[in-house]
Image 1: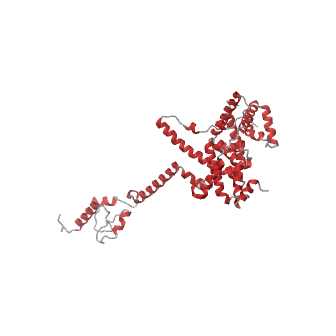
Image 2: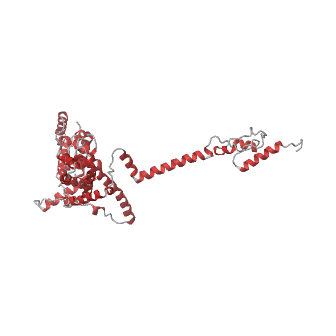
Image 3: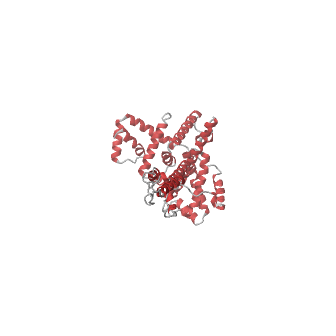
Length: 199
Length: 197
């Protein structure tokens, strides 16, 4: 029995425009969450999520439901876009650092970075002190995630924040199952060390 | 099972995917090792904290912006670049898109081409060239009238000019001073002196 995403893709391939809109509605929130957590930047996350859907839109005729699952295909495209974005950002940052060193001014890199924790909906049931502590912890977790090496951060976000299975993550990252499991365990161990002052 | 091996099983134990043998070894070690008990508790708490991070919602304008972009894309299909994501040859080519690699590669190719050109055209690297035979003549020790005996090896780039020389003239290298000197020596010895000098 084909899953709903495959059915929607088939319908879209046959000319049903609404099927693509439904696909976007189903996946826009998890995709934005994934990209924002991975690259630690909410504004760029929206842009990259839209870019992912445009790539899917353009390549829809080549999609075959027997070959891959829509969800893993979507995350594969998004992961590659994120990697390119981070690579380009690294180049820009190197350039920026050089300029800062030359001009002797402070870096404005932090100003560009959106505080994901602050922008996330807070639970009003908490006391202010508790909420502040909780916000600090969330902030620390997001910072710790963003400090992980890319090869560990990506499977960790897919597993612990997106809830993908190990098989799905292996498909997205084109890794063997054992490598995926090992990287996720290693990423969690690194995170445990980074969060030592908080947990 | 030691502490490092136990640590490798933290995720599998947390997700209940260990087989019977590994589970038994892990739990035996944990029961005996206080440090691992402490680390495993912290591991569980940090995983739980990550999983409880709130979901980030897209802005209310996400869909409308996307529809605008898709409409633009349908009108101008080339406005969005083809997917350059790395698979197969794309990964190899991707390396050369990085400026440092690209420039290094181009410089290496230029240097290699220049080196080959210089090696092929410079007489210093030509093993056929034997200037010693010229020195022998110039010292006048073995002067002979035979053009064959005085023939010297020429550098490769001068060889072609030899075939245009008259048969009774000694072939010489291209340096004009050297040519003049050798011709003078030959004419001197072939002139009859009738026992004079």
